[in-house]
Structures are given as structure tokens and as C-alpha cells.
Length: 140
Ligand code: ATP
Image (cartoon, rainbow, N blue to C red; front, side):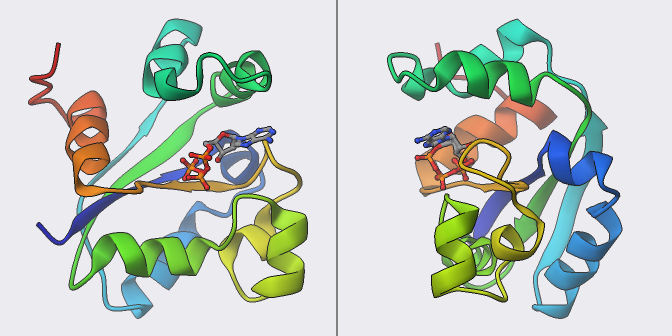
């Protein structure tokens, strides 16, 4: 149960931060169980973020997430979900720079949309997101 999904989003991928972020994950004592580069088309990005489909930022989020490659990692380790979310910091990089200046979003994020990384927020999300990228997608 101690697994989570990390995504290096297109902004951080383009800025060549994948290796830095990978190293940080390993140094934090998490293991990488599966990983790969993916390109989301618009329909896949919409599906991935469907819980936000009624939000005003949804079209922007979808076009950003399908604007270039992402790097997806399945992480494993004690309290992986919490640990990874602590490492990435608040959604908004501006807030992250104030409250959590060493976090990944503080260092590599730009704004609410271009915020460098994703981390699953619950075990249910992990299962859904993991299936999305690595198979065993059983829901719906
Ligand atoms: P993630 O799910 O990517 O780890 P999060 O859990 O911190 O991020 P959510 O509230 O689940 O944040 O939002 C998902 C994603 O939607 C955010 O990472 C961000 O890219 C985008 N987003 C959230 N709020 C806004 C906003 N107000 N304006 C623009 N984009 C937003």
C-alpha cells in the first residue's frame, strides 16, 4: 500500500529536471518500481484530470499536460504518498517559495498550472493513475 505515482510535468521535463528529481526521490529513500516517458494526447489528459473537468482552469491544464512529454514514476516506500507530497510542496509554486522553499515546486515550478510535478493524493488515486500509465486499469 505504500506506493505513489509521481509525474514530472512537461515544463520540468523540457527544462531537463528529470534526472535531478529522480535522484532526489532516491536520496529520500523511496524506490522507483516502474518508470517511463509518455506523451499524453488531449483525450488522455482530459481523462487523467477528469475530476477537474468543471473547473475554469481545466482547458488550460489539459493543453499544458499534452504539450510535451511527461516522465512517470511509480514510487514505493514507507508513507510514500505523504512523503512525495511533502517533497513536491503546495500546488502553487509562489506559495511554495514562501512556505516550503526547498520543495520541488518552489524550485522548478512557475505558476499554478506549470507546477513541475504531480503526486497522487490518496491510495485510490494511486491505483487509478498507476493503471492509467502502466496497465491493470480496471475501473469503468
Ligand atoms: P497534482 O494533482 O498535479 O499533484 P495538486 O494535488 O497539488 O496537484 P489539484 O488541486 O489536484 O492539485 O490540481 C491538479 C492540478 O491542476 C494542479 O497540479 C495544477 O496543475 C492544476 N491546477 C489546480 N488549481 C489550479 C488553478 N487554480 N489554476 C490553474 N491550474 C490549477
